[in-house]
Image 1 (cartoon, rainbow, N blue to C red):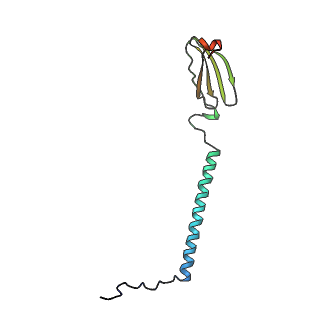
Image 2: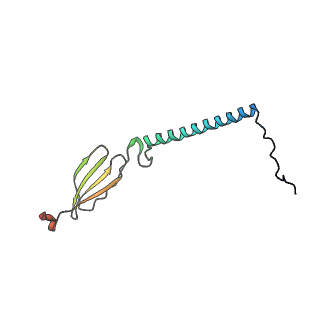
Image 3: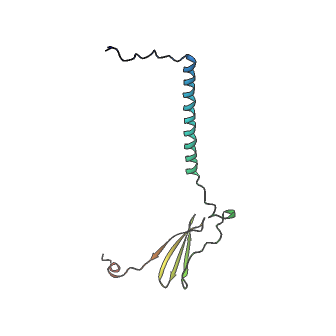
Length: 128
């Protein structure tokens, strides 16, 4: 049996100076492309977060939303209207009680309703 059956590795070739420069240049170009892409993504995210687009279907020409339907039961009446910069509160009174409707004045969308209920029983006496 031969004692040395493992092949000896050949001498590794050292890349030439030109090959090294090409590799370094390729690495630098790839790094620049990565940094530029990351910058574009971050810039786009910041821009979209700071300037959200309004939905085109909610706002009509000239920034007006047109007609917005607020449902009021027959026999109910509007007691008061209170408006802030972008909200409208409508106080409605009727047979079933009173409620306050909150509407976004920029879009005309009803955001919610509060039903006002009278206190009865123990709570009316201050005993909980």
